[in-house]
Length: 565
Image (tube, rainbow, N blue to C red):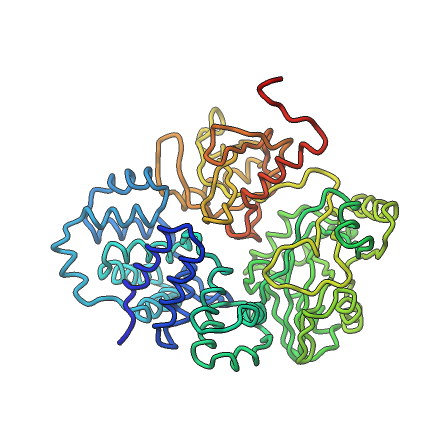
């Protein structure tokens, strides 16, 4: 018998209600164990708030303005109910459920006599994503209306969360790996290794259900299937990096560019962004460069794409992002904004995974297959003086700073650790999410120009505000930001609007302070936006845990105020 979507929603209700990780993991494991094989991946994806597997290039392209209009039509409720519920919970799914619960339930009972199944929901999501061209918006609206018309209140809550990628139950991929291991009685390390290779825990769960341990042990990289990226932590300076790496490290220029993952098989090349989105079409010169130079038949590479001026000097990140967004007039854009590629790692070559190899070995293998493509400038040293001189050279050349990489470190997809460290000479900026905005004054009265900034709670998924700013963006950028935020508004409070947490911005600041003003109890002093991070999703934003760690580190160089002073 098909598994009902309501069963999935009810499991998520229980997960959301507990902050005990063992309990939530057990709940999900029991649910997965009872599924049919073909239901496993869709269920895992939806539990994590995704409509499709992480590697999929399908997107729903559905705005909140469309969803909210359909909710109002389907329920016939007073929309003020939504505003009140959202004000209490701050959760768009819970507020949607409240609207359903206040609607005419006798009419609803007739509408959802035929219950939704997990696979029916997935098929509908695929049809929504596949709707393109003339009349696509109307088709999407009809499909969404059909789903929401059949939904019970608790189902509507989680359908809306999946539509908008706003699950926020605190159940993240690491816990899902544990749930999969528990559900199918497999070693956690094996599940994690398979997840690293395939880049999607949903597919791993399917293989675990369908073929057990033997299937997972045969898992390897798939060219043209993007892999989760290895991430770095921040170091205060080269001395800390050397200490963390045992006295010697590979220092490399940290370019002010966009990280890319490049896949090649024979004469075909695809380029994926930091968010694992296929950007091949927008970067034809990068594709051509790889085709002409990389000698391996099958390979997965990592590199940094940098925008430069006519004499090769790096230019602002915002110009590079224009290239990544471009789908028309690409040839002209390539002339106006030339790109350079610097390679820094290789994960897979001709059937062999290299992620377990030490970094110095991967770098050597990369040099052997890269042809005339530049590798990132590198200095391997144990000397603090040499490393600081290298840092100065990087800054003088217009780059951001350095990366420090432990020489014997493996590549660990999807994890952030101290094997790779970012070294910058100034206070490290934060990548934060805009959660609300206010209309400006004077000449800015028609623009949303004062932005509330939030960090992500790594434990709960909640976005916690730590300040607001009206500084940093140009008039043109403010006009563009106003349009973007208006499409994300979930609550209009007159002078202030609350928006879905989708837009990531890089924020500079002078200090982190304690503040009773915000739930986070943290606030940024003199915050200003330095750039819009279109290459990052909200889930890539910095965490409140990191903000608190920065606050504590400040006292390494200055005193701490106490009331007795």
